[in-house]
Image 1 (cartoon, helix red, strand yellow):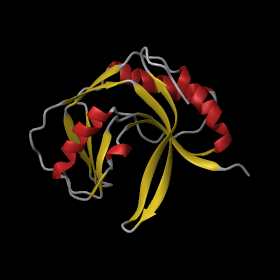
Image 2 (cartoon, helix red, strand yellow):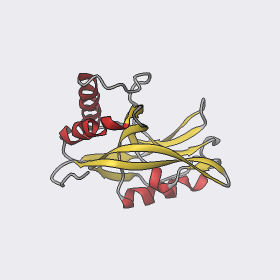
Image 3 (spheres, one colour):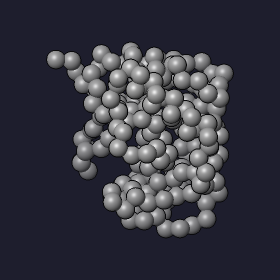
Image 4 (tube, one colour):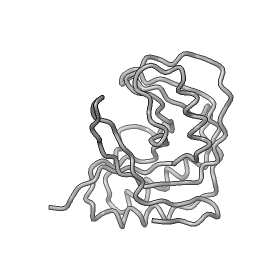
Length: 180
């Protein structure tokens, strides 16, 4: 039986964007998402055979787009699972097209992914949290150009189980080089 990995595709922020997002977490109660785990999920694949990773990496490498400018200018709250998030008041068409192209490629290859929810691009800032206090925050301008295929693992520490996200393949939008 092949080893199985829990996988997803994501836009991966640069360090400046991570730092700015971390400052938005200052008023959060509950569990703050560690800076290294901040991202926008494009497609959640769930448990997949490890031997599918080369095909998933090819799909990632096939995605083409220029950098996508994201204006992170709002926060929100998912009350049913107590998640505070950051996102855009208006989703750029280029981001919607990129996600649509990814979903089409997965469907064409008959690779399963979570189809339950319509795409709601957001960055989870905190879990098991009360609604974030409303404060004035300067918008964050993120030149999104880094796509990754991520393995989600859980690690145990004295405070319990925590997700750990490990990029296993990456692709750069625009003129940057891709790597695996």
